[in-house]
Each structure stands twice: as structure tokens, then as C-alpha cells.
Image (tube, rainbow, N blue to C red):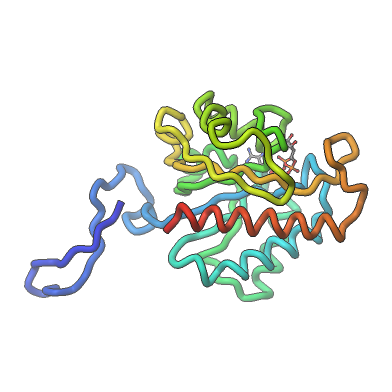
Length: 231
Ligand code: AR6
């Protein structure tokens, strides 16, 4: 938490400076540790088999749209490997559009260990969820529910029992969750994207008119949800 305060030192009289109330040991820098940061995976592009070119267009378009609403907050697209195709597509398209790379960037790592393994402080993380908002199923959903422990499942069920494609659900993470006390994650935002995988519920049968609309809605809901807890 930060507080605006007036310095009493002579040289800086009446100048407003930011003072951290309780600096966290090992934080990257005092400034950065207080900046609201959302880490999110590429929704729908692995298990749900959504086209990567189309998904990368939508990610960059939605990031651009939300940039001026973000204040000092940051958005980070995360994937597990350097070879991630979606990360390189998004990096290239974001650079083409001159999106400020200090406020939106990509990061390689497990979204459940961004601080302890990667030194990247993200107070909010997004989950590519399933419609039942249940653990398991693989991918980032299984990883987040595993890392967060039972506290996340209980907190999620307190708020909703299911999710429609294109929607997001913001869940405050109880401080008993390891994701909270180890990684500094205060909120998980579940997002349900469009499904193009015939072996999963509500498959869109390659209907990319509908699919793109649902993915756009999913990112809008995610970023709005982030803004609602960031500011
Ligand atoms: N950290 C960062 N990124 C990850 C991680 C991780 N630990 N694990 C996967 N990714 P996916 P979807 C990336 O399949 O396509 C589940 O079964 C991954 O490389 O998790 O929306 C749910 O229950 C990819 O870029 O989500 C749903 O039923 C991105 O996260 C279904 O999958 C999303 O891949 C949702 O499928």
C-alpha cells in the first residue's frame, strides 16, 4: 500500500513523494512492487484450439483499447516457454502498433510462480477457466487451482457456480492461499473463452465470427475486472 505524503526535509519541502508503508523484502524495486499488474495467459489457444493469428490480433487490439484506462497499471501476457508462438505473434503485433512496452509486455514462466521464480510481481492473475469453474482439466486452470489450494475453489464457489463464454469472474484470494502469501497474488480472475475443441463443451464448430466476438468479450471482461480491483 502506498500513501501520498509531504516530505519535511528542507530540499523537498512541499513536494509529494510516495512512501511505502510496509516495504516487502526482496521486491524488485519499491516503485514497481506497488504497481497493479495483471498477468494473463492466452485464453482459448491451447486446449480450446483457437486460431493463434486471430487470437493474437484480438489480444493486441484489446490491450490497445484498455491502455489509456489503465493509469500506471501493467498487463503481462504469460506463457510457459520461449518457443511460445502466441508470445512471439503478440510481441510483433504490439511493436507494430507502438504499444508502450513498459506497460504491456510478454513474460516466459509459470503463472503460478512469477514472483518466486521470475522476480515479477503480479497482484492479479487470470485463469483460462472451464464453464463449471472447477479445478483440473489440465492447462493453466489445473496449475492455478493446484497452486492456490482449496481456498481458491471455496472462494470461487462463494461467488458463482458457472461461467458463460466471454465472461470473467473476479475472485479475491484468501490470505491462507500459498499463491497469496508466496507470490503476492490478491485476486484470480477466471475467464471463459470460446471453445473450438470438439471434445470440450460448447464447441463453436470453427465458427470464427462467433468465436472472435466471444474472445473479444472475454478480454474486455478480464481487463474491466482487473481495473475494478486495480484502482
Ligand atoms: N503458466 C503460464 N501459462 C500457461 C500455464 C502456466 N502454468 N499452463 C498453460 N499455459 P489452456 P484454454 C498457457 O489450455 O485453451 C482446461 O482444461 C498455454 O500454453 O490452459 O483456454 C480448462 O479446464 C496457453 O498459451 O487454456 C478448460 O476446459 C494458455 O496458457 C480449458 O483447458 C491457455 O491454455 C481451457 O482451454
